[in-house]
Length: 84
Length: 179
Image (cartoon, rainbow over all chains, first blue to last red; front, top):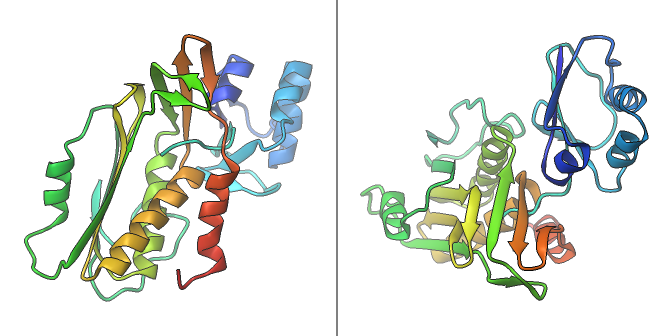
């Protein structure tokens, strides 16, 4: 199982804060997972997840590019941060 | 969360354990509740007499941002990752400067104009390390810790955009290690 989390503007645009996906139907890398989400959920999701500056984290570590996933991973999509 | 630096922590997977001689006491809290600056500052000083300098920063909710009136600020975060990333930032600061203690408190949830949002306090033997580490922690926190601000005002809701000048401020620490 993979847990996928969405935060802030991304969460609002998708109308979804988290989903769980059955491994390995999710794809076994980050790009594959994103493509799988877009195929399943449609163009609205494709547009949101493809936004410039989208940040992707795996197990709470920000990833600069694609990476392999493992069963049990926690993936997050979120916009640039604005704390402080 | 309060821990002695150098201890293995489940919240700092990004940086190797610090190689520092002195023990730096690090405290990181993400909370809805307000905080008492005087109490935080006194708890930063652990009763030792090595501290020669404490530098602190307090951030507040502005009543206007980019000419928009702000009545309420909603702060969202990524539980777990937020605390881990702040702790990582403080650990980085403690490797760059000889710190004795560092505390970060960041509020989340619904805040009003004028409310305190964030407090950073750093204790060191000398002012240079305290000033620099405090600024470094704030600059990195603003660009790396997963918080998101949404403003609510008479013109409706508005997600705050990440600012180029914040990224520039954080980047300058990489350009010049001697800052």
